[in-house]
Amino acid sequence: MEIAKRARQIAPSLTLEITARAKKMKADGITVVSFAAGEPDFNTPDYIIEAGHKALEMGLTKYTPAAGTAELKNAICEKLKNDNALEYSPSQIVVSNGGKHSLFNAFMAILDPGDEVIVPAPYWLSYPELVKMASGVPVFVQTRPENKFKITAAELEKAITDKTKAFILNNPNNPTGAVYTRSELNALASVIEKHNIYVISDEIYEKLNYEHRHHSIAAYSDILKDLTIVVNGMSKTYSMTGWRVGYAAANEQIASAMSSLQSHSTSNVNAVAQYASYIALSDKYHGDAFLEDMRATFDARRALMMLRLSRIGLNYIEPKGAFYVMVCVKEFEGKCFEGQRIRSAYDFASVLLEHAQVAVIPCECFGAPEYIRLSYAASEKDIERGLDKIASFVAQLS
Image (cartoon, rainbow, N blue to C red; front, top):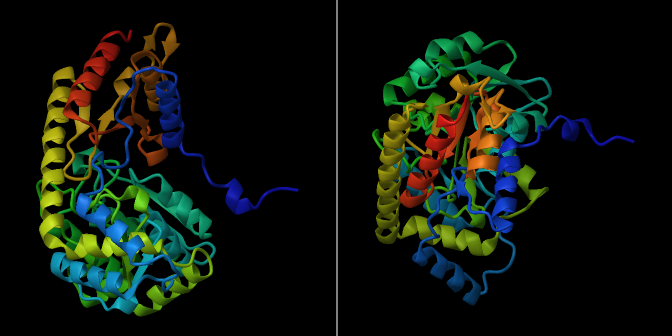
């Protein structure tokens, strides 16, 4: 007897493998500098934690509607209206167990077996696996460093076939840190409208945007909005990764389908987390102060990391958003460290962790096999210390 084909075809996560090794080293008493983090290193703001306590005291410990409480969905509608110029009704909002769950629901709602989904590379490693779980076919489009790894309208149009059902847009992007300008989004939107395909717009890093104002592609036109599933959540914006609250906004038909799917799988999101999320979005005074402090801190770390990488002489893609920077390590292929040959970015990351006690993420699983990803969700002290170690490590390669 074998397990199901859908389970067999899911690729293991290299990010989890490197992270697990780093955690084991720490547990064994070894000091490790980690640039592997995929979450803010800030604690959830006090006003949100207090809201969680209040929810318990109020007895909000029961089931809620599967797609989310009315107050949270209303707060999400207000957020989308005020921040993104997007008008949605509560019936078009589905609150799920994190942004990844929202993406899963979206693909399950729109894909039939064999439907193709265009995935620009580099990409967040879960996108193709989520597509495959929904019986879809990921179609990768390799973007170019000279375009900051952003897909162009011409590249998108060339990739569309009669089997194309959807296109994934991650803006700001993980792992590249790329941010699309309004004109770039408008050009993509024109192609999407022309071919009448869906777009999954993952905007989870929306508030971590350092040089451009965030624009949602759904705001391009009413037609485009109807074709777009906007995915966002509380994890990165309010440092609530462990609370597991994501949400999607879509046309009535898709939102209804996503709600039905969720009602028969997980049902509602944790009721306490929903109330805390409602307060997070509604209390603009405390929320805006936290967001600005976090954004400014990450921006300073971004500048420090780029400065240090430049001094070492490493080639990197300048990030405009999120909290990652991609570094090219192709020049080190074929070199050795104490007899260990580096044949790939994975080897580079593995040997670096073993000998320099620095954790980075190899980007093979992100569709960028010549790169590693460094997260600057780390203190400035750790950034300095970790890059000192990387500088020493690369200097010893021969």
